[in-house]
Structures are given as structure tokens and as C-alpha cells.
Image 1 (cartoon, rainbow, N blue to C red):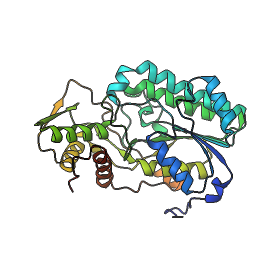
Image 2: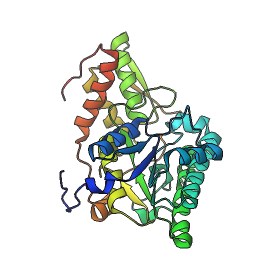
Image 3: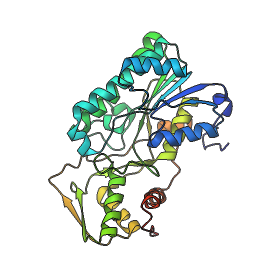
Length: 330
């Protein structure tokens, strides 16, 4: 297996005899993570499907633990969406994310599992966090309003993780990934994040001969994006090597404005029309870029995928579903 710059080598022996439950394992990030678990030689991976287990309900959580008997739980499942979905469903996003995470961790503690890996969100950071975001800044203000209920629900898993380690010696970790993107992303216009939303708008404009697209906000906000396969690798490295409850960022260490992102996606999809910014819609958090040094130090993680190439791969995947448009080279 490939060894990274800090000498942290993925360890097949770690996974060989451990039973791993991956909530959200059938989702966007989950599919990539489960594949990497299989590549590492993990023979006992359990993915609770939403059709069989409603993880907001305690009785379903208990039944899932009975059925899977895990040594490790990697909690990826979340109710998520872009700015529009967060504005429309703040109560749902708060309640369901909170109840899933808190009850899953508590039941894992009661059953004495070896490790619980909680996946947080960059939305947990304060709205005006100094760039780059450092883990120590996490509590220095209130999150950006449009996604605060989701961000705070996820942030409570950090509180729980630290409290449980202190009182019970329970081994849980808390990771903070930036916005993910890549093949298999959610392209539903009602709930997608910015990269798949823009890809879909540009592709459909090309297909339908439209001369413009409308983009939310002013275009001045910046974002950082992590390729989904890199995120999966970071989570597994943390699971293998990190055993503390201090939060750790997972990111690629760069930022790009929405206007720059729109221009890149338009070029890659062949959209040559006008870009109209709907300034009546919110930008969300003004800037996002993580300090990723801690992840490198603690478990040797660094994002590998070049951003333009990752976007190209994401567009190619979406095109493979529509089978109508070819990706242009940058």
C-alpha cells in the first residue's frame, strides 16, 4: 500500500478482523469509503440501508447494532443539502442529524464498541472565522445563519465525543470535512450543493440551447472543495491512527470564489452563454478555507486530487448519465 509523506501507511492488518458499520454507506461519500475498506481487506462491512433502518429512531438503531455487532462505527449518514434546502428545512436538518448522531454514539458506548468516528461539517464553524479556519476557532462565534441548525446539530457530536471520553473513556473522534465533490454526487436541483448544481445548470443550458444561467448570490463568496475519494482516504487514515476527541479538519487547503468556479465549469461543459447572478439570494458564509496541517501531522492526510481534474471527472460522470455532452479540456 502507498505510504504518505508523514510515514502513515494504510494498515490492512488493522481492518482484517474488525467488524465495521458505515452509516450512510450507500450514499455519495459512503460508496467510495466502503470500496476503500474492501481494498484494505476489511471483510466485515455492514451498511444499514435507510429502507431497513431509520437511524433517527432509537429502536432501529438498537436493531442495527444487534444485526451488525460492530467493533467500529463510521457515522457518515446525514440529512444535507445546499443553501436552499437548509433554508427550507432548518427544523428537519437540526432534529434528524442531532438524533441520529447522539443516539448512535450513546448506543455504541453502552455496547462497548472499540471506536466511533463522527463526521462533522465545515458549517459548524462561525460565520466570520478567520481564514484559514483553525480547529481552535470552532467555538468563537455563531455559524452562518442559513446552515446553522445543521452545523450545530453536527457540532453536538464533538461535545458528546469529548464528554464521553472524559467520563467513560470512550474512544470517539470528530472530523470536519469541507464541501465534498466528485463522481456520484447528488445532482438533484432541490438539494444539491454548489458544484453539482452548477454542472447541471451548464449541461442543461447547452443541451437546451439556453443563452444564460442564473447563479445564486454575488459570486464573491469563496469555498474550498475536497474530492470525495480523498475524503474517504482521510477518514480511514484517521480511523486507523487518530485516537483523541479534539476536532480535526479534512480539506484540500485552497479556496476559489463562486465566480471563478462558475467560469471553470462553464468552460469544461462548453457553456458560452451569459451568467446572471441573483443577488437577492444569499451567498452563505463569506469565505471558506481550512488549515489542514493538523490532519497531516496526526495521521498523514493530504488531499491529492488537483481541483480542475476533479471537477472534470465529476462532469464526465454526470455526462455519462446523460450521454449527450463531451467534457471540454481546460
